[in-house]
Structure formats: structure tokens, C-alpha cells
Image (spheres, rainbow, N blue to C red):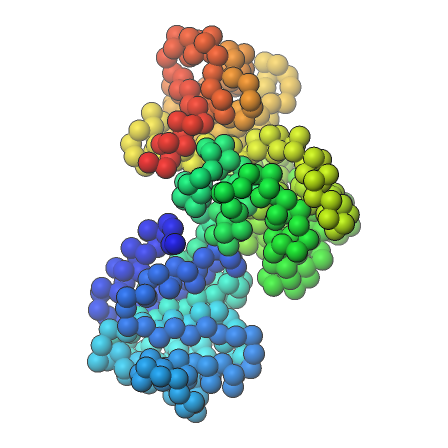
Length: 466
């Protein structure tokens, strides 16, 4: 079953129907569904699909040659072209007679084994782009390689591509479509546990409870998710131990650069480089208070839900998990799940507001959304606003998100109103989100204020998945 990626498929279809030479670069982190997207796109089209392997040039050339010959004859053949240039030129010439797609998946493996491949592609694109109906797709999981050796200004292929797509994990609405049998609350919990990475979502079973899913994956030493963070780091970076130490430091509460540096035992300049790479991979995110582009208040947090969940709960229970005591490990985790979901719920609420904006239903036409923290001058204390979005100097939106079993009472709304007055907007709209709804008093107060929208999670879910 193929889910989501409508925009990406539509973009690829537009390229395909142009009937002229097209060159698309598709890249993104491992497990994010790049190959599934490509296979869905080419399933009813004339295409040569070749996946590179982490081997030498000879092996990759043999495999590529077999794919070409099988496409031509319909049966496996042992013929091997003398070079990648000869093989690629053959494909370019085939595409002079018909619309043809050539996919080179895991391109970095091939390019590393054949140093002249990029220059060869450059030569052939320049030679045949006017006469060939080829649609070339280069796909890669090594984000740094694709950005430095394919997309960057200094790369031989720079200026030849007609499209590029960075494939990101699904947002909440698409992840819900994987799990028709889960309750609304369980859908949010699964998103909080594994995020929107398709390969991780496939490890979840909506015929089982959340408890059983956690035990079968994160608390099971034979599960692929149990060692996934460490395995992914080994595949993506050269010094996984230091990257692991940085993520562990952030997961344990170190959010500022100096704190991370101290915990890891490295200079801030070293940590800054590693954090930049982790941000490129989407594993770590950098935040400043809303409206402050550069700030001493900059903090770092884990940006991928599966990594957040794993580093929050697995290391501290590792000994029990290794001994197969999943029941006891889960008992230690379960009391903290609601608190863990607070940040996840904030992200879901932001996605809801973006959906409202795109459909023209949001009272404030914000340009971006973010979190704000700082000093409340009237109370002379530190405070925080979950969601903030500015339309202009006069108009803004403020949001508060509560993932609690109790109904949200008037006090939360009053606090929210006070915090919004730290800023001096003439027009303000307040959004209060709650997992289990609102008390009668809260609803009455919101009605009197007139600039408040109360959103219960179940209503949010229905809107996002309609």
C-alpha cells in the first residue's frame, strides 16, 4: 500500500509529460521512502531502474549493464558495456526513439566507485539534452554527498538538473492513514514514538495496543528499531560515537551549546560542526525564541520523534531490555508518556494551523510559527508561549497546547491571555488546544473574550485527516 507523496508524484508527472530531457535529483535520509516513491512513479512507465551497491566500479557496471539489457530484451543477459560512458550513451540514444526514464538509485555508491561518473554524465547531458527524451533521476541517501557533489555550485552536474526534491518524513496527517484501527489518541502516540518515517511506521501494528507495540519494538533486543539510531549514525557519519554522545547530551537535558560541549567534553567549535551535520540529517533542530533570528537564547533539541523516544527511554532501561524484562521496562516508561507527548502535541497543533492557513480558514495570516520564551516584565519571571505567529506588526496568533487527561479550565486561558500581552499587538487571536476538551467555565470565558478558538484534539484530528 502506497500512502502520501501526492505533491512529489505530481511534480515527477509534470516532468515526465514535458517530453523533453529532464534531470531530477531526489535525496533524503535513509528509510524515508525515496525508493518507494520512485517505484510508484515508474510502475506504469518505460523505465530502467538501477540501484548502486557499495562495491567497486566493475561490479556496479556489470549490474547496470544487466539492467539495460534486461530492459531491452526482457530477459537477463550477461553482456557488460566497456565503460559507464558507453552504457549511459546507449541509454541516451534509446531515449531518442521513445520517452524513457533512467533511475540511478543510491547514486553516491556508484559515483564513489567511479570517480569520472559525474563528469561523464555532464558530458552526455550537454551532448544529448536537445535530442534525447530521457528523464534522468539520481537518488541518494547520503545527504552530504548529494548536496556537495550533485547540487552544489562546484559540482560537475551543477546547472543541469531541472528539479530537485528533498524527501522528508511524513507529517501527522499522512501517518494516520497507516493506522485505520488505532484510536485517535493512539495515532498521536505512534507519531510521537516513530515520527513520519515510513520504514519505522511499518514496524507498528494497529491491531495491537500501544503498550504491545512499544514492547515489540523499542523494548525488544531483536527488533530493528532497538538498534536503529546507532545503525543509522554508523551509515550516515564518520564518527558515530561523538554524534551519539551529542544526541545523548541533548536527550538528557543539555540544550545550549555550552552545556552540550561540557557534557561531551569537546570544544564548542567542534560541537557546532557536528550539530550542523545532525541538523542537515533532520535529527537535531536549532531554535531561537520566535522573532529572534540570532540570540543567546538559542537551544538545540532532538528533531526526529523516533530518536527522541529512543534516547529518552531506551538507554536508561537498556540492561532490563537486554535481559528480556520488557514488562518491567514498560512500567518504568508508561508514567512519563503523557509528559513526553507535550512537545509532540505542540508540533501536531502547528501542522493543524498551517492546514487552516492553506485552506483560508485561519483568522491570522501568519508567515511562520514558532515557540517563544523569555522574561515576562510584569511578573519579572521566565515564561514560555507554545505557539506564536505574526501576520504584521499589528496582528498575531498565540497558541497553548495541553496533552492532559483533565479538561482544560479557565485558569489556563487567563494565563495565556496574560502572556500574549507581553507583546503589543493591536489584534490578537488565541488558540487553546486540549487533548480531552474544556470545562464549561473555560468555554464561557472564551465566548465572552471573542478572540479565542478552543480546539479539542478529536476535532483537530478529523480536520487534518478529512
